[in-house]
Length: 413
Ligand SMILES: *Cc1c(COP(=O)(O)O)cnc(C)c1O
Image (tube, rainbow, N blue to C red; front, top):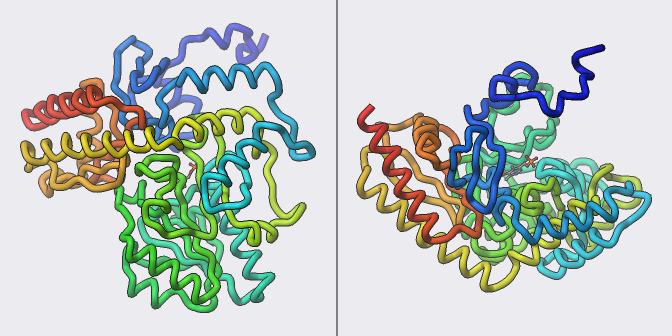
């Protein structure tokens, strides 16, 4: 019998080494393998406990295995899994109603990831301009250091050359400007531009909040030239900044908004939200995806949205943000040789390393993990914190304590 078909494979012991044997090496995961989570608590194969300040990269915003989500998902799992787009379903209809009632948008398109949501947004913008103005209006403006996903189109629109190198030829008619540079925006956004895509808070690019004046100017330039303004809120949306979506806090409304990550709290789902008029661009047959708006994903997302989108929940995010920033500022005061600044928005925060620690964010991440605290990095110079939005003040204090123990160890080494 073929060993690969052995029925005991589901019980076979696996470890981090297995990753190096049978996974395409696109990632370099941590040495420990998590097996169970509850809220911000996580345990690895050896039973070691971790405090999770990563939320699966701003995804599990309600924590691991949130009871309300386990409950609705279990019920849906026992009712209906999948239909395909020849049929609609009740959960996706309710989710679309809830998202459009909660935002500027009138219409939603569902897919399975952030990249796909941006792909849909960019395709809509191209097709809209093509139909309304003609083929010459095809240029897309994006920002350096931005991140919009890993499909060939979205990675080309993203502003980090290291992610496109070797994948050429890239789709044409895409230009990049410096983030928060109003003059560059004025120079770049002309009549041949069909879309301007921007993260209101850059996540992967180092946790950099957009300047209100910059985002307002992008809105004005799009209005002037007939380009569509796309806000990529895949990372900063769904309550992470303390507003349901970051655009609400800025008071700048996009034409298209993309969401994913926290929308499903770990159940894969992405969404593109837009106005009624623009949505008509994507008529029957112009775009689609097999799983988009699947009843399982839609059920989870609806409960996530209903849980996050209350004044009390969002007010607590802001309060937790203030407390986390105060904790991080304490670190900067006590360890100026390691950290120089804190930046970000809400519970998407970056701790910028000092000159002496330039390029060493990963060392700090590893030292924290050894102490039982999981944090992220954003580039090599920023330690990124994105705890679940349900983080308690006790957990914020504990994260600070663990970071101090980790830094003390690094300084001694
Ligand atoms: C993570 C991310 C994406 C890509 O989402 P995927 O689900 O990984 O495709 C796009 N934009 C931003 C801002 C992100 O943070």
